[in-house]
Length: 157
Ligand code: FES
Image (cartoon, rainbow, N blue to C red):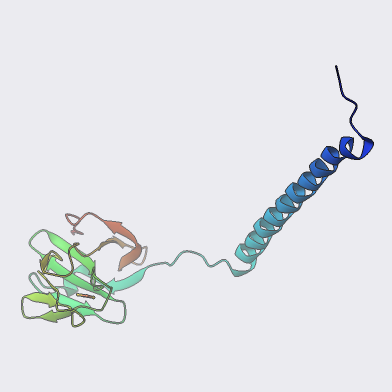
């Protein structure tokens, strides 16, 4: 036998559903507003990707010589296979490495890397990042620090 539900209880459920829908739509509105704010931020503050950092002509770099560009935060080296550019940020905690004889030295926690960016003494364990090099329309070499490449990458002319 069916029991009759008092009027107050009968309308309790729809009110909860209305509250849920209200909260759900409120959440959707907040998400939509957040998306719109992001879109507006990108519209007004968008900066085109960096055109890269120029490093001059290939002939400027002598074979076996490593150059540390502290301003641009990378090492440039030319070996028998060509030119390559490595980050000067230690892979342990990103301190700036220094060229020390035939190694790269981290003054923060004394890690050492060989001239190809391989860690030879901890605490750093990862190899340094290599960056893409290309020649622009003005025939100048450009490094793109936003694009990492394999350590076998070499720019050759
Ligand atoms: S930051 Fe280089 S060893 Fe710690």
